[in-house]
Length: 84
Image (cartoon, rainbow, N blue to C red):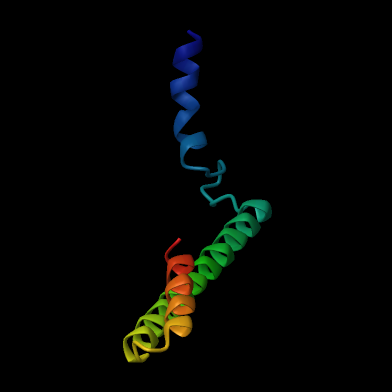
């Protein structure tokens, strides 16, 4: 009998709608979604920045003369730290 009532009221719970058919909007859920979206955008921007820095570092490493060993070593270390 308990399961019957559970399945009877399950659609209202599952669809998050009130008895009048309006969608229930919880401000805390909206704020949480906004903060998650902001975090996601920051991560994407950081990743894009790291990829640009990695490309620039590769280009500098290719253009650096072989006799400039100290600069090449620093660029190699920089590239390894960007990959990690």
